[in-house]
Amino acid sequence: MAGNGIRIQGVRKRYGSGDTAVEALKKVDMQVAPGEVVGLIGPSGSGKTTLLKCLGAVIEPTAGRMILGDEVIYDDGWKVRDLRALRRDKIGFIFQAPYLIPFLDVTDNVALLPMLAGKPNAHSRKRAMELFHPLDVQHRARAMPSQLSGGEQQRVAIARGLVNRPPVILADEPTAPLDSERALAVIRILNDMARKFETAIIVVTHDEKIIPTFKRIYHIRDGVTYEEAGEGRGFE
Amino acid sequence: MISLAGRDIMHAWGKFVFTGLGLGLLIGVTLSMAGIYRGMIDDAKVLLDNSGADLWVVQKDTLGPYAEPSSVYEDTWRGIRSMPGVARVANVTYLTMQVREGQRDVRAMVTGITAGRPGTPGWPPYLVAGRQITRGHYEAVADIAAGFKLGDSLQIRRNHYTVVGLTRRMVSSGGDPMVFIPLKDAQEAQFLKDNEAIRQQRRRTASNSMFNPPGAPGLLEAVIASQSTNPFVNAVLVQMKSGYSAEDVAGSIRRWKHLTVYTRGQMEEILVGKLIATSAKQIGMFLAILSIVSAAIVAFIIYTLTLGKIREIAVLKLIGTRNRTIASMIMQQAVALGIIGFVVGKITATLFMAPIFPKYVLLEPLDSVRGFFVVVAICLLSSLIAIRAALKVDPAEAIGG
Image 1: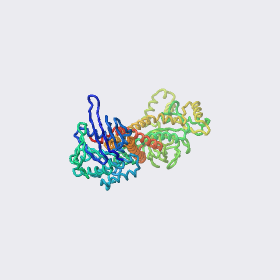
Image 2: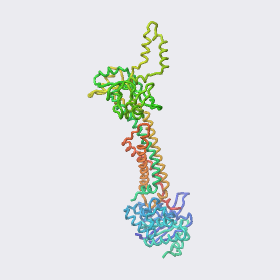
Image 3: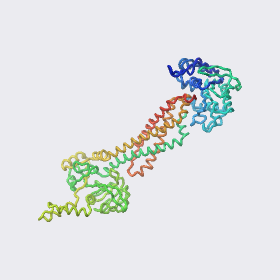
Image 4: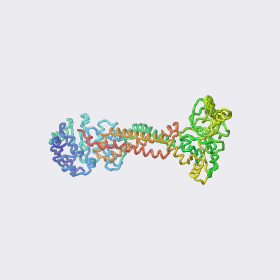
């Protein structure tokens, strides 16, 4: 399922052309193994969001190569025809805010993804429920998002990112709105889930509280990534 | 797959129901307008049906007796009665006026009918209470819509009439209830003047040397007597024998009597095509305007609801929801709004608007079916703007930066 996690080689992204062209990503190289959680850190304007959008198959890079699991998804051009299906089945997203669908209850918020992939409703809900226990939201399964606390909402969002067992999860500042205790709890969960489901997780963050928890960190500056060993405290 | 539209509606049902109520009142007005139009046509047809006539003989080159004034000598019927194919004939007068009962006035079409028996052309074909007119003067049969009761005393011009019978759905093409009185009384009512006007007319006639020449003392009295009587009726109603063609009988009356004759089809064309044509156009315009307003409201509501979900739509697109699923969600919500609106509108039109409306409102089932599909079509079209906005949402909006 997870294969080789995600590998990014020489990815570049240029906006515009001619004199007004902006090189948002100049040379991005990354590799995240299944079960690994890495941090992606950089100042504003460094290209973090652009990289996340490229990895999420939301915008097309200008050049480079991206391999997801065993599948080359980009090699100087998309190699996958249905990018929606790619995002749905192979990439999990966790956002700064949970962005749960307000008119669906917790179970259906999570089960929606397998349903969109054509799985039967009962099967999809069963799959969602399987994630609730490790994330400690099983008692809120029928609640509406507005009835949840911020931490519960974020855990449900994590469940949504995991439900299709994607080889990679992109987490965009997932701890930004949380206090230290809850932020660390979220990172602990992400580590647990990465190991449990052999998922590669890339966490974009500014949050200094959680930076020491990463074993590996990618810094991005002016569109170029640099790898650095983290303090590696982790959550073994 | 769960119904995203259904879940959204259930989640914000108050918003949908109240919006649907508002839209429903608008649809109710629209259905009522269509009902008023149908009612006008029905009134015209009922007027013709209830007259019991197959042919209407009127003054030459007029569209009488309903659309234009028409005067025919009261003895014209005798010659028509003897023509081939004619079974029964009857004189009739129509005069739309205010009829007074006690302290109130009612706009009514006063109809003068000849002595006869039920089934005579011009007579009310059935009664819901009381009896038909049996005396030559001062009795009346009134439509129940006029609000009169048996035994009420009506004042028409200077004379008083006792209501002896009540009928139903006997109305003019304008929807005014009919009041039937004896023909002689109706003829008098059409020409009756006040005493001062009669004295003035007599003075003028006497001062005219042509009518009052020396040596002819009886001439002035004769002229004044002819001025004081009304030898005209508005039309002669004709019932035909079976087996005769209406066009043939009408043709021979035209040829021999030098009068204008209308068949049932021609009279319907005059009433529907000419008399209520302007009203029908006005109602048509109202219907068009109301439809446009309804469409604008639905479009605005659905567009606003969609804009309120832009972030959710971006997330849905990012996690792989297809455009057609999102478009379908918006369309279903628009249609749901239309269905709520239509149900509310239909109930409002049937239970609240039609019964209290002063004109007859005929809500035909087929019109409701058509209305339903028009509402659904309008909602579908109105949702296109919101769908366009939703499809333009970039899934990248869900990702910060």
